[in-house]
Length: 138
Image 1 (cartoon, helix red, strand yellow):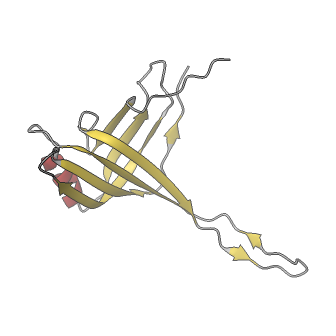
Image 2 (tube, rainbow, N blue to C red):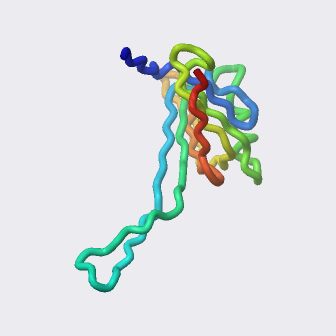
């Protein structure tokens, strides 16, 4: 069986219905889980309880005259969670590896530039609730 690795450029990202695919160049998703320890009688070692998950997202990219500053600020200013989708690979393509979708809250936003480069942005977000994954359909 051949393995089809998904290249990093194969992604589609939307936040608050705005397409960030053209502006973003780095994306990360992180999950942590509460794992409290539970001592029990008659056992020399404690047990671990599988607790709640917390998901976060980080992304960054470049700024163009066409965007995404206004969209980023609107999403960051929103008092309610906004919708997001992250497609891994090309939709219905050879590198389609599924997608994540849900609600998030922008928790941090940075805009920066240097004289030898471009204007850049980076954002961090907390996922509100679960981070459902939809596997690709054959």
